[in-house]
Every structure is written in C-alpha cells, then in structure tokens.
Length: 194
Image: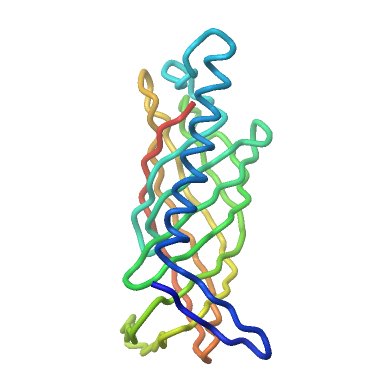
C-alpha cells in the first residue's frame, strides 16, 4: 500500500509494506552479520549467559511504542537503541541515546536514562484517540515528529541470554495536520543479549 504526503512543496511517497520488508531485512542482516563474525572467530556468539554485561541486544518492546528494538553499546555505560514501532494503521522509527548505571548493587540490574527522537507515519483512514479526557485526531496521511525522553530499569537474567526492561518514554509529537500529542509511553521489553 503506497501513501503520499505533501509537506510544503515536497511530495513524499511511502510504500508501508515495502518499508516493513526493508526494515526486517536490515535487522536480519545485522543479526546474521553478528553470527557470521562470531563464527569467523571459531566460536558461536557469546550470548552473555553468565555475564551481566553484553554489547548487543535484539528484542521486542510492548507499550504505546510497541515493536522491534535493537540496542548497541558504544561504551560500557552508553548505548544507542532503535525501535521500529508498529501501531494501528501506522509505523514509527525511534532512536534513543542511553546512559546506564548500576542499581542497588545487584549484578545485572541497571538504571538507564536518555533522550532521542522519532518519526511516525499514519498509513490510512482516520483514527480518533481519547486519552485522559483529551481528544486527539490523527488524520489520514499525517506524519508526526517527536522528541523522546527515557528513564527505566533493566535486568540481565543470570544464566540466560535474556534481559528484561521496564521504562517510561515520555514524548511530545507534532503532527503535520496540526495536532500535538504528549504521552508517558510506559513499556516492557524482553531482549536476547550477546
């Protein structure tokens, strides 16, 4: 399904199904590259089973921004996380820059906070949302641009390659057809770490 937006004198055409396939292909290539690099070194990837530390995580986040998430640590206490979100008749992409700190002297338990931004595309029809007695109308063909904050806690489960996270990702979004949104966007995530 193709969708066309006009912003000022620019026209943007987006094929949502093609975009979803491209994003899935990118994630598959990234994951396969990680496996291939590990096998080239003569071992399977280190799935961080017995370590609270890891470099990369791939998983899902459930919340208002729900979808596929990929996190890469760039330093021992800093990471970049991307979320490809899918919602009713829409698609979003979020990039977050995160800082980590140990929590409560528990191995594998970390606080994290950060900030970033997102872009969201509405793909068809009109959707009316009621949130806290506030009426918002996200019209057909809208594009939303937003600024995101982030605060949460993550626990790398001992003896498994899994990490669980609970966070709040408040955001403000301006929609091209005139609406402004605000949400706390709490979320729960589960990731495979390596």
